[in-house]
Image (cartoon, rainbow, N blue to C red):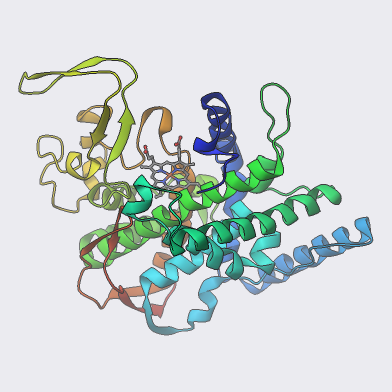
Length: 409
Ligand code: HEM
């Protein structure tokens, strides 16, 4: 799906090294530099900050032009997605979250060039790849059906867009603080630099792994918060306390202090994991003992399934498992920890655990803290049902929400 140069197209050792390039691009030290760009996408900046952000953008563009005489990428930063909402109105929460998440990924992962000049084109092509996902493709990925032809054509075009950005950065010695740059700078253990095709394949893979998952998780979190007055109030009170302690400015450390919001997201993901089951190939024979004392031999060569969607509802681990109760993860309860290492697997576990977990939490907290601080929100639609589609559990239909601007003090 992402090309023969990455993932299952290459040998095991190369694949492992490529995984570590992705992990590196999303590790904590890099994440700090993504907070400001994330905030710039959502925040309606005060007049002073807006002027300085615009000034920064002018200076950046001028520097680029003067240092290179010629420049392929001249861009300005359109600011603050939510500004266009105005004072009050009604929106489809799912659609709005998708839009803002795309802008954030555009800036933090793909880079300014694509974010400013061709984000719509990028995502239209990207959705062709996503739309090719189906059960038949799971077993016969190269079967020549129209969806696969569209997928392959889209991948070629996406690669062209990304390659052009990579080449332009190299041509003008332009260095950015985004995941794309981290991949461009990656080197294999034998000293070989990563190729352009590998960078583009890995980047499409990262967007694929992050887009759907974050969009579903943010929509479920919002639906639960707006459906539960007590949880909503607790989350708002936390924002008030944080504003009192740190002022309105948000940075990496302020985001880490949002424990309640963190638990609200985690609980939404317990009830609706984005990967309903995890699959693993057994390399070495092992034995499992169940709580009831049954013993099972698991032979090498078999494939095992860990059904997250069932495991998260086990009543001796999660009290009243059907209930949305973020405090089950709070001090004194910590049901996921009490239940053992793999009781909570919304981000998987072991060697293939999700490297985007911290990034995902960060962007969901940026968005939801902004919405809680600045809008009075009400859920107008009934609480969404689950829709099984493309292997993930989506909230079904539109999630209509009314909003009215306000400011927490
Ligand atoms: C709420 C958001 C997210 C959730 C719930 C989530 C969940 C998961 C899960 C369950 C897996 C493992 C699948 C398996 O074990 O078979 C996974 C893998 C992965 N995720 Fe995420 N993810 C999220 C966000 C992201 C983001 C934002 C990125 C990147 C920008 C990302 C990148 C990856 C990658 C590269 C893998 C493959 C890891 C490997 O195979 O070694 N994820 N994710």
